Length: 474
Image 1 (tube, rainbow, N blue to C red):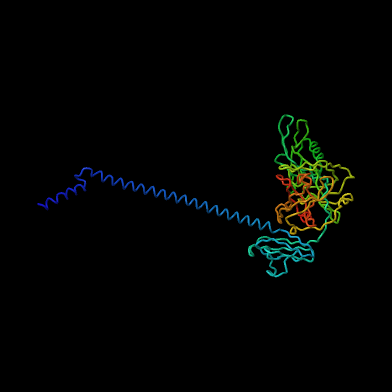
Image 2: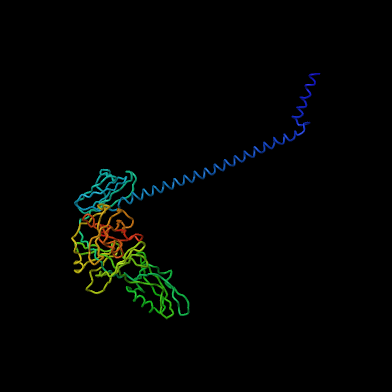
């Protein structure tokens, strides 16, 4: 009986567990299913969050990798530019003299060719030049060599021309001159429209001619003057004309049909120019009576292209006004040019990116009152004190400047030297460098090293100069 009484509660408990008789048994099972479902949902959320974080981490890693790659490429590019600009493409050395220079770059070099031999007769590797240390070169006669530069001693980097030149002396001038040049042909400044007699707009030259073109011939006959060109177009009677045009150094033929404007004159809708005038500074006179001036070429004011010159003349000029340079305004020297034979100083024979050059007459030779100075090569130029020779108050004199940077292989030949005017007298008159001072000689340590070429518009005290050896290469 006792055993029987003890077994009944067991069945009851079992029935409770089975959910057959115990009230609320279904609720326990439901809660269990909800917990499982909730746990599953939580796991899904956790997996989704994990995947989202992994995706973000991948994006972050990709972004960081890309940033690192760009930084490395930028640093490599900057290093390449620094080394390339530190190694000049041309090194001039004086014949018979030992020339030393220091580039301070992680590269080695060897001579691989000579101008009079075609190839070097020096065994390969016999002359190993360490460009990270000072280098001294000496050549007995005028010649040229090619030096192959290898970065870190094994990566071919660039070839350098070594030119052995004769030493020479130049007379620094620093005097303002008037400049007149005649274009080789008629320069096209631009094209445009004009109104015809019936109110119709015409532009015959548009899409055929463009700024910077030089018109050399009309219907096979040479044309050199603007007025002659205009007259021949007007006399065409509206018949198609054939133009011989120089564009980018190449000749081409173009055919244009002139149209009448409201006054009945025939036109082709182009603006043309046949000359240019201005004021600059004569840089030097050499031992043969030739001059160099400006330190940069004469460009057309509208097209900004180097003018193709048929010929030109240098004149005496009188400076009548100086507009002082300020921030954003470089200032200007205004000169009066009288185009008379008695004021001619010489003929301009060459207009190049390095300046204008020609022959002096006896009047111009009288301007060379300074003592001749030896030229200073670019590897001899130092940062620090220098002087420029110019005329701003009626007298030609030296003014102090500071050379702040020297670019041995600048991509702009006119900006190898950076300088700042420090002389209080010059600053008081001009505010620094002004237009018209281009060509002013730069002197350092008793040597003629270059000429002023440009002013920095944002700060008229600062400017640029060209190496004298580059001017002499014209």
